[in-house]
Length: 411
Image 1 (cartoon, rainbow, N blue to C red):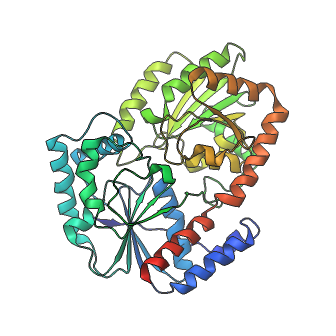
Image 2 (image 1 turned 60 degrees about the vertical axis):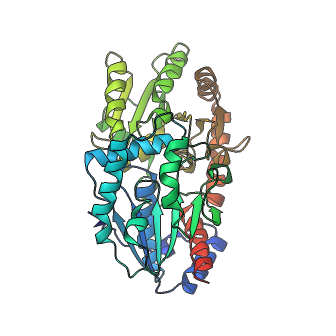
Image 3 (image 1 turned 120 degrees about the vertical axis):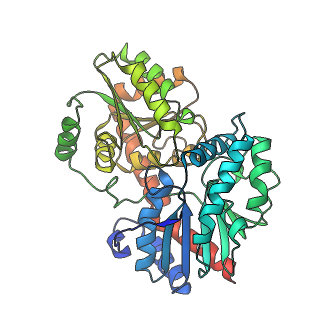
């Protein structure tokens, strides 16, 4: 069943001196115009992934600004989450569509959750495909509604899109990370593109001294000082962790002793992650220089923060990507990134800023080696990347643009 998620308290004043002042003032202006509005966000998991991280920071900030904001997550069976993972992959272009049994599991779970949906909201924002049918089943009442799609749906599996499309037609607006992600024949007239953002004051991004970060990594078994490259992501085929291992092994021929950390975030809505995790551990079990961690086995937000600060290079070798928050997280810490030329990654790393974009295992290995061997280039890219994130990809900018959209729906 739909369950509320508890969050802490947060103040926009804490971002003074971190986020550009015009963005903070713009956010306050938008919030004042919506003062007292009741807003509900719905997604599929309270932890493990970019959406839940964004909501955990966004909800208390919006409350601080005078809005009545709630966050709820779907309850679901293992069959439901297997079905939604299949749907997620299919919408990103995987050939597998939903079987009749998976469609039934998806709709049955939606019907079980729908009676818990409150009719008293002014705005309801539904994130990604998992809860997309909720309003069709329940009815939206008087609320204005938004479907926020965080994945690349530019070339969806046709059968999967035919299944989901009628539910999307019930929304007043749809939001995508990039205009290129808007699927064909989208049945929503009002479409916006809004890039995600990171929270610079969350435990994953807050300042840590090198000494503290080093103690954290030493505690979980990473040998420092020493050369280290890291990929932080869900254990997902679209993130190509096996390609990362292959590229790393090419680099290690030139950099003996180089360590690789694969740090994955497990989530309630991603049963596939454990299968990938088992395959990775089997691939690396006789290699003591490869470290594999999850948020359930010793590497949560603060540990990720330490990895992103002390790694020589962060890798994000995505084949398909919505945005890739870990890129901005790493750049915020001044660490250069080698990343796949996919989805929203290039907007975070324009030419000459932040790192190097790649399209193959060999290119990934060459880029990693280049940054490991050229500390001046690595430092310059890291510094330019941090400033680019400060200007474009911090949380208050995201909230300002989202509130602008809600205001337009209410007028």
